[in-house]
Image 1 (cartoon, rainbow, N blue to C red):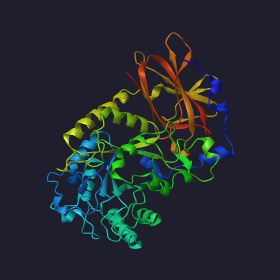
Image 2: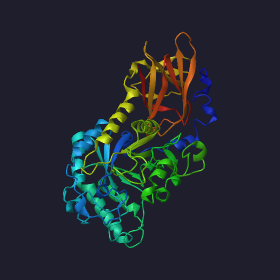
Image 3: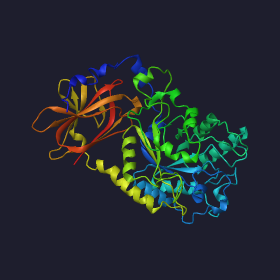
Image 4: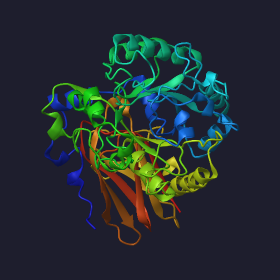
Length: 486
């Protein structure tokens, strides 16, 4: 272990990088909107893939499915919300329409909808009411690709899509996100659609101004795969050119059998989207946080059997690691939990979710109180933390935390105040052990952003720790630092 070197602190060396000046002014000027800030507080939420595909044991339908087959006799959206709320979820996104064109809502623009099935009820409406009951936010997935609609591939389809989008904006209360993927295949006439994205966005902004528009949208970007894999440094301030809809559409699935490939790759332009080395080459920057989507099973819709899946469900351990790496790595986690043909989340998924919940809560059970925090100055003196807010003065090198006697450090959670942009580029954690008096480095990390989770492989028996930013863009500003010990 390395002993602490105050000379490495942000306010002294900053690893040789400019601390104040034109470039740091340019980078820190890029900040999130209010809707993005509200979204970032959610951190973890769920996807529900449900539709006519569920009854045909498919991932992608072709729009020719018989609606009489859709009849989930025990469907219970309260059950969905109660179970997902129990995992710590903050919201639910429903596949209001997938690529097959079948709509789970009461729409007057196509007969290919749930009201013309034996079930005959508006499922989006049911879910919106259940979300209110359980304190969850409602999100909408509306597939731009429609393999059933006759007008797909013509300009008239944009009218059709906007009409349905308007129904969803107006009829189901507040919506926290509209989620658009990049699928763009052929319609009945063999043509592909030119999507009028600007028109879609303006419709949402008119009727749901607080909703974020995700993936093919201006507010939240795709992580680049469907397996929850994140970068070592996940940035929110990125070049505008690195996140265009055309690139997302190019990298999206073109075939239902690509699921395994999509879970493995990490490819949306670059492994480094936001370091200073990258950003100096780009004039136009945007604040666009990352979202990692993954399914609890190896398909997005519910399956008991499907020939191209070697396994059916991911382990709770794997999913918990995705949680720690996303929510704890400046990204959000979107976990898909598909209901079965009865319209219920099955026992198979409930078992996984219960264990997942236990695992993600385990490192955060015993927080240390704020009274043990102080800001360490260059002269070795300290000042009390102001109202639990960690804004560094020019002569302050780190956050000092006293560990209660008899307790051992097990984890740390931190958040930056992103109203002032993403600033921390590198930091270290040092520990002072009883009877020694010296500080030793026990962790080295990079970005913090919307959330950083540090878990120690073995409990650390230190009497004090110091969290020292070593490279930043202007003064570091953290709004939350939580220390957990046992």
